[in-house]
Amino acid sequence: MVKAVVAGAAGGIGQPLSLLLKASPYIDHLSLYDVVNTPGVATDLSHISSVAKIDGFLPKDDGLKKALTGADIVVIPAGIPRKPGMTRDDLFKINAGIVKGLIEGIAETCPDAYILVISNPVNSTVPIAAEVLKKAGKFNPQKLFGVTTLDVVRAETFVAEISGEKDPAKTVIPVIGGHSGETIVPLFSLAKPSVKIPEDKLDALTKRVQFGGDEVVAAKDGAGSATLSMAYAGFRFAEKLLKAAKGESGIVEPTFVYLPGVPGGDAIAKETGLEYFSVPVELGKKGAEKAHNIIGQANEYEKKLLKACYEGLGGNISKGVEFVANPPK
Ligand SMILES: NC(=O)C1=CN([C@@H]2O[C@H](COP(=O)(O)OP(=O)(O)OC[C@H]3O[C@@H](n4cnc5c(N)ncnc54)[C@H](O)[C@@H]3O)[C@@H](O)[C@H]2O)C=CC1
Ligand SMILES: O=C([O-])CC(=O)C(=O)O
Image (cartoon, rainbow, N blue to C red; front, side, top):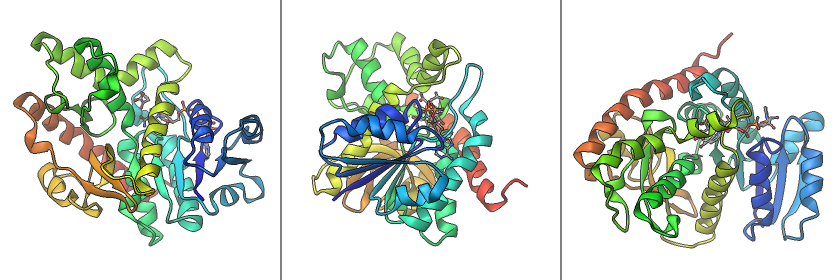
């Protein structure tokens, strides 16, 4: 019996993500939680003839607790998205409090669940989640994941446009670091099978992966940011985790984790000077079972990108930690 919960289920990401999870054979029970519209979304999805039983909850009548009771995996796309001209960090003011509240609920009701944080700014909301769980004495770093899969999905897609590969997802491209602008570092030199990026295309390709979110924000022109591609990416990560939890071996996917708490993470923390970082992580029953240190394999071009990444990411992480240590009055 696997129970999944989506918190923020009525939103632009939440709805298509819930649809994909409802259709997954790996889920037996799906609970939707949001501050609005979950009864409608849940009723709509309940007509789909897949195995998962579904229900929806609002904050009233202890809805968060009811949604989270017995959860094995909680995916969080709750919070406001960007509009043109905003950075992900501009979302901090509102989304930090939303994530904090949801994680407090998880700490109380289902502390053993895998927690997948999609809400931006991921570079700060994951540290917030960790600090809230630490405070409650319930932190299991192997079960807390910042979802950076969309960066990987974009890298696969944009590289295929250059390489001509018919099935973009067949090329594995590690994207590491954080989830905003220059903190996103695609390591094309480590692609498997290897890809040849013409030198005059490398800068533009790198920037496109780093700022892919802006491309969607601009095209949506005030109507939000990536939702459908994010739902696909969030589902891809969630399903890989559930497959690994069921015993499938060899599943590795980049994700933003608390390095000191994941086997293999200490060496990466030492090298980067950061406690949180997205690296390819081996997934298993325990969650994040091994962080792969591939930083040393980056080429000179990528090492420069990493330097810029470390500078930006450190501040984002401290901001999240500080938010829980000294909550704004
Ligand atoms: N990690 C990633 O790669 C990506 C992250 N995002 C982020 O995901 C978040 C959601 O984006 P969208 O779905 O487009 O936004 P949206 O505004 O369409 O949906 C957000 C939903 O969260 C709900 N919500 C607000 N407060 C809540 C609370 N306390 N508890 C439960 N639900 C609550 C809202 O009612 C709404 O239904 C944004 O922060 C966005 O920046 C977006 C794309 C990619
Ligand atoms: O750009 C945004 O604000 C949403 C996001 O994280 C992405 O699309 O990568």
